[in-house]
Each structure stands twice: as structure tokens, then as C-alpha cells.
Image (cartoon, rainbow over all chains, first blue to last red; front, side, top):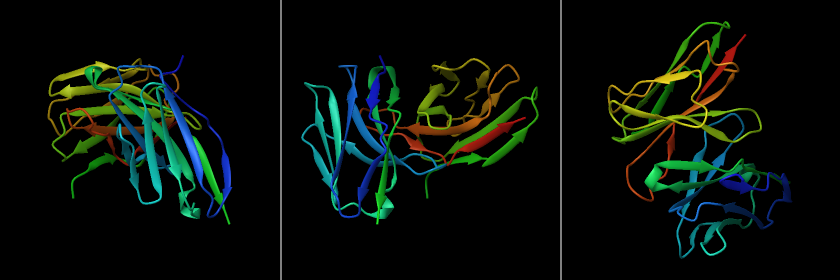
Length: 110
Length: 113
């Protein structure tokens, strides 16, 4: 079983739509959670950390459900520029390891 | 501005040659990492280092070697023993505390023919 699993998509949505991604993780000792954005042929860039109480940054909302071991990312009012691959990343600090999902591809269309 | 610098951006080598990828950071981070990404796939950990003069193998260390002589620098050598070296290589660093994210360099795209 993979440490972190994501639906690869692609999610094809029109501009202005709301879209949500989920990500499940297998290690209950995981302590830190992140969403990264990766554009084609570029490095991943931190979109947001995910906190236990949930957090929001503009059009982006992240939530963590420790009981069910999943995190989610909600994007409201999608823009063309949101088209990218979104990576779910989980950290097990004691082992100083970061585990990556394989990414969910989002295409926002005019 | 603080950050991670990888060089070169593109690298071409003949099969059988060793090649070294550079990674330098000025973020004062203790931990540094090397990942490999193949087309359409996720990131796989090659090596990581939590402190100077110490490093650990990741999931796919065979055919690679690293050194950590300085806190700022974590070069990766792709040896001729690596069977499929063509890939996108990403260096990253993080602070040594819970909740610290990874910061990535802009990557080196290696092509071996």
C-alpha cells in the first residue's frame, strides 16, 4: 500500500467552478501535512500547510481528518492559472521523511 | 533572497559517465534531500541528510552517491551504475522541526544517451 494516495485525475472544470481534491495517508504517526502545486516541468511549490483545525488562504481551503486519515483541498472560483498538478505531502517527523502522493492534475478551461 | 540553487538546469551525458548535480542552499536548513521524478510519476527519495557529514539512503539510492561536507551544499553524483538515469532531479531542504515544509530548488533535467 502506498503511504499517500491521490486520485490522479485529470479534473477538467470550467472557470469559476469549485473543485475539491482528497488525499489519504496510511501512517497514523504522520504529523505534518502540506499541499504543493507543480506546473509542467517545474519544481513543486508550497501552496499551503494543513492544520488540524483547517485553514484557508484566499480561494483555497485545506482540511485534515486525522480519524479517517485524509486531507482535502478545496479551490473556489477556479482560474485558468490554477491549472497544474496538486501534490499531497505528509511528513513523519521522527523519521524525517516526507511522503508524496503522485499528484492530481487540474485543468481549468475557459 | 534565501533559496535553493540547483545547477545546471539541463545536463546531457553519454552512458557510462558519472555526473554530479549541484545543490546549494542559504536558508540555514539542517536537512537536505534529493528526489527523482520521472514523467507522469511522483517524487522518489534518493538520499537525505539531517546534519553535516551524515546522510541516509532513501528508497532508490542504488547508483547514486552524495556528500554533505558543508551545511549549505549537498551534491548528488549519478554514477554509471544507475541503470535509468534520465530524469528530473530535485533538491530540497527543510528546517529540523515539526511542521516545516520542504523548499525545492528549480531542478536539474538530466538526459543520458
